[in-house]
Length: 90
Image 1 (cartoon, one colour):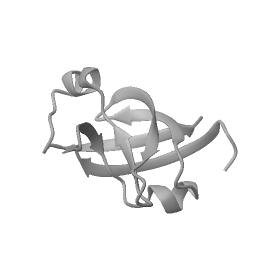
Image 2 (tube, helix red, strand yellow):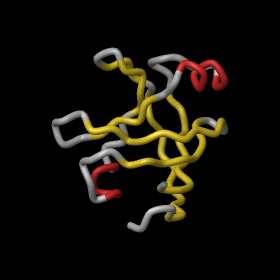
Image 3 (cartoon, helix red, strand yellow):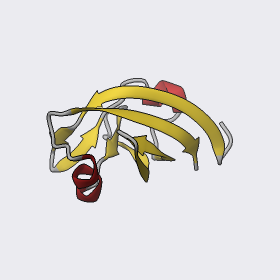
Image 4 (spheres, rainbow, N blue to C red):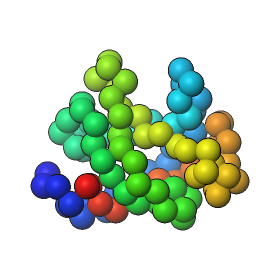
């Protein structure tokens, strides 16, 4: 997939607190992006805009970090399920 590619993918995920990272995991991310490396994306989480990257765990899966600022804006916390909409791969 080319950089700055428009993507339109929505999935639901539970916010997790894993090894000190507050994040969401999308099991299809590696097959969707065709990479286990870091993949920069932007979109929305529960309607709140974000720009970050799917980060590799090192076990062949990836996670999407959720910042404290984003949690506060969404009024969500680990354990809550959110809707993630990916708009663009950067």
